[in-house]
Length: 238
Length: 42
Image (cartoon, rainbow over all chains, first blue to last red; front, side, top):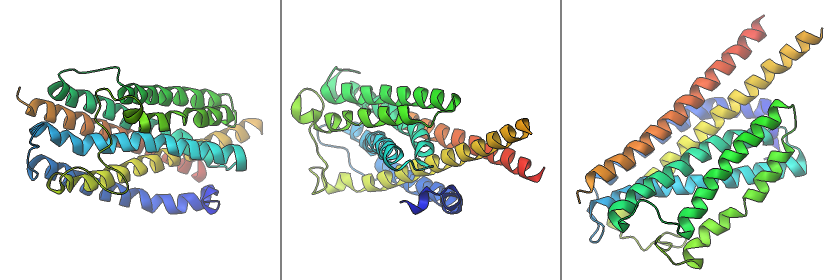
């Protein structure tokens, strides 16, 4: 981890990785979505609407994983002052916000035919909405801090405090048993029938690869902009 | 209730939002790296 905190070393790895991740992500996510739409049977209770599972679950995972990334970057910035930590945090935030948004919208669309409502102030839905607002807050805070020439420490503290919401999202279906179903997939197994489940790993891996590709591209953008700004500042001084 | 409009809408939102994120990140990266390369050449 420490070795990759060097921007030059990071760029040497990120440049070829971006293209590969985009290609692998597009193929896996595309294959998983086609399989989920055409090759799996409808659910005995939910019918065809169960197909939303193949995009909703990866979006929920990436919405939460994005904030885990922000929390890890924030921690390494505060503790080790890694030069890439603030760059990583700023790059993860828009990608995480997009997937948190996709999770909320796809869940709402799934809820209408399944629960008979677009929205309910249920523990899982509300904590996910809070995560989306936390992303917007982090993006605004990190941008304002960068504009002022700060190191990004305030955004890092916000990133660590915001991580408190992650266990709330995870355990919300156990703490408040309202509308959202309980956990059906865990590290040890799944309660979903294998005939329905198999395209899910494809979309999970595919969207994760696209997420990482987007983060790498945004980090490269941030580093290139930083280089241009530094050169312009030097030129203005001389 | 016909479920397909809901399924199609959910997939359209996901593909559209992911495509927009990738396109925005790619365009921003290309613009910034081109500007940095031009500055290096000067």
